[in-house]
Amino acid sequence: NASEILSKAGISVEELNPSEYKDLEISLLEETLGAVQGKILLLGAINLAAPDEIAEETKRMEELDAQLDDLNEALNKLQSAIKKIDVESKSKFDESFDEVNLKIQEIFPKLFGGGKARLELIEGDSLNSGIALYAQPPGKKNSTISQLSGGEKAMTALSLVFALFELNPAPFCMLDEVDAPLDDVNATRFVAMVEEMSDRDQFIFITHNKISMEKSDYLMGITMQEAGVSRVVSVDVNEALELAAS
Image (tube, rainbow, N blue to C red; front, side, top):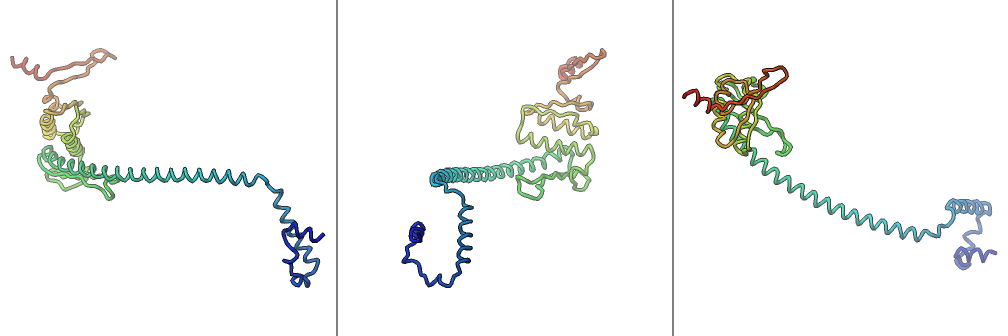
């Protein structure tokens, strides 16, 4: 009966106000009731396990939130470390750049018998900037290395190599036919620079230049007296000169 239906719906008779419904048509109420019942059917069966599932998903969400907090903390630490490394790297780079720049300005005139050279940072911060090498051999305008002749490019590049070796010496320096484009005057200056630096650095270079070979302490050559058979020939230049003088 009606009382039972209201009781199941959790509504008491006292809560109803008949005056609010006296003008409503039965057909309209039935239509509304049908629509509501249709929506209820669309909801499907009641999931009795929903509370447990909600509790499980809530626990899972809390675990994910904790993982997210850990990741954010790790990210902040990593960003802080990267920032610190960038600051230290920039400081060391700027210091090294200035030292190399001063050294190349010292070595370049020795190799060219005058002139000047310098390094410049291209636009941008130090760690992401390019580096331009400007060189002005004696009697020429200031220009980038790409505008120089082959011999001038080689000598300018050697100025940079020697500047780096002066600041951070290595056990040896190996050069492969760097004197090939040099005329006799520049080859003589190149060899003089090698001799000056050979007190603390050992130089090994492949060369066909007579001036370079004459100034070397030790020569090694590869010959092929028989087809397909290579032979190594070595000469101690100082010993050979002593034998020739005796």
